[in-house]
Length: 101
Image (cartoon, rainbow, N blue to C red; front, top):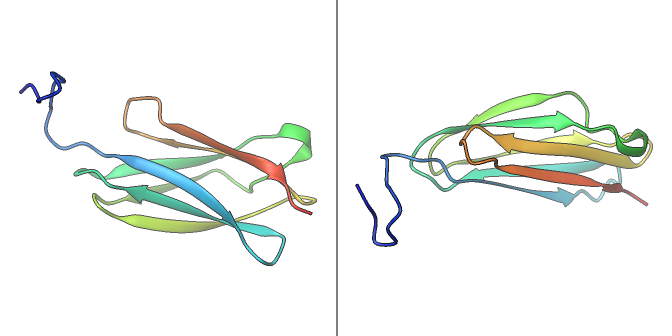
């Protein structure tokens, strides 16, 4: 099937998004994972190692179509660095890195 914008439509599809919010405790962040699509998707939260930062261990989470979930992520020595990907086949990736003061 071809859509109005001439793109090909292939049934149900996930539409992931991720954003992070610093928590008032100065040591954690809340990661919000949303899926506005019509199919479930699996997010992977991977840990990077820039400047000794840490986001904890690698986690995977499934978010249903139209759903959302949150994760609490810890920092290491006030630093955090992690990448969120999703299994949607379009290269979805969001990196969150920084330092808490």
